[in-house]
Image (cartoon, rainbow, N blue to C red):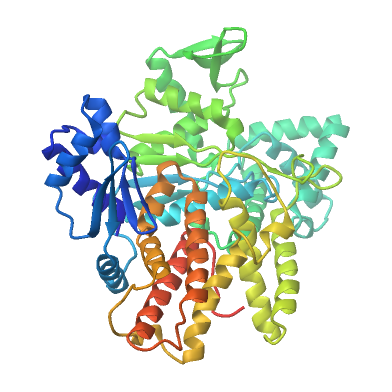
Amino acid sequence: MNLKRELDLQIAEALEKAGAIGAPALIKQSQKVKFGHYQANGVMAAAKKLGMNPRELAKKTLEELSLTQAKEIEIAGPGFINIHLSNDYVADRLSDLNQQASFVLPVSKANTIVIDYSAPNLAKEMHIGHLRSTTIGDAAARTLEYLGHTVIRANHVGDWGAQFGSLLAYLDQQEKSGEKTSTELKDLEIFYQKASELFKADEVFAAKARAYVVRLQSGDPRCLELWRIFITESVNHCQAVYDRLNITLTRDDIKAESAYNEDLPQVVEDLDKLGLLQLSDGAKCVFLDEFKGKNGKTLPAMIQKSDGGYPYMASDLAAIRFRVNQLKADQALYFVDARQKLHLSQVFAVAKVAKFLDESKSFRHLPFGVILKDDGKPFKTRDGAAVKLSDVIEEAITRAFDLVSEKNPELSEKDRIRVAEVIGVGAIKYAELSKNRSTDYIFDWDTMLSFEGNTAPYLQYAYTRIQSIFRRANISPLALEGEIILDHPIEMQLGVKLLQFEEAINAMIEDYQANILCNYLFELAGIFMSFYETCPILIAEEPTRSSRLLVAHITAGTLKKGLDLLGIETVEQM
């Protein structure tokens, strides 16, 4: 349920009856629900907009307002309406929530939403820089599905760029010399480095590599055979990372650049028929006045290179056509590096001018910052190479295992290994998701693996602490009966916070800032800890005991579901 939305609608209706026509739009974002009371700041906004006296409008609004949810309603300050929620109302809504199959109601209108995320370049192994797109995009996919939308995951991997000429030439050279390429391909990063070094040092090899690009794009059978070997191994590397990170992407979600190859000539032809193409140094480009460089000149959006090849602009336009025409997407979300802002802005603009994309479709670029070391520099190895994501995962799990072994040595080694995997992976994902998407952040092992503060281990521990209550009492949460009673102020505070889960999710997807949901879960866990310390549970008399167990159960379920939407697992004991 969405407590804020429910009260918003009733306030808006009363405001309109009081003479504030158009009130729903005026107060949409101006209400607050906090610690058991609702402050209707929107009355002030409505009064100012309509030229009315705020307190007089508030008074008229109260006369039209009939709230069963309130135990007290008052006008405060220059015209705020404070609604103090009834304990019984919050308790009843919690009971309803406990009976529901889901913590939120499905959306009234479901959309088909394509989410373009992760998108590693298959020339190399996934590195730390892929963490942001992968985790943020996956959290968005999980959340939108939970709300009832049809989500299509699109892993637009790079498998068709110029660098593949070097890789294929090197692979061909290795096979002809009788070397075991399968062994070398187990470390794609080394394979890529050797091919690149040879390209720079050997002009004969470089010429061969350039020829391989042309042969590959022309459909040469030998090139395609080598290319498929390399791509298969690369995809295996990526899938192994996704599986360890608990990412929902699969091989079936891959729609690589090469998949659009056949449509590229048609894209050029269609743009040409519309009179949008101009030649610039032999290349076919679209010039739109809204994109200008520092010198004031219009920037070109290159569709076809002078040598006949196709840049990313062409394949991205082909992808838009596919997503609109074949996938019937209502929306598309591109979780792509902030450095691609100009490129994607041009892609969307050209697509709209060409009528590949109409105004009824929402295609958005959702950029993100970069991950830094504690010295403020990009996260790389000492020799300047990109840090493999698989190595980061392995180190996170190793560090988590040491922490778990120290914290609970009584757990079996098998259990400690499992708990370490959940904590380690959860820690690096939550460290990412708990930050504002658009900002850079510093990667810090000690902070992300701490059991204190706004971290995954803290939230995971809060969940297991609740589960331990039921283990100690030897009670199944599903067997609980009785009413929920909220007598203590901290019980009321916790109850209201639980009813705000849907509000937090809706706020999260307004601009796909996962940190909003992270902050909600952190606050929820903190309030529960205060409740746990203030209100005895197992030693309380009935019916208080059963009531507090029910509240604890709902809290555990909310924490678990919230973490699940972020792609973070929980364990019953740690």
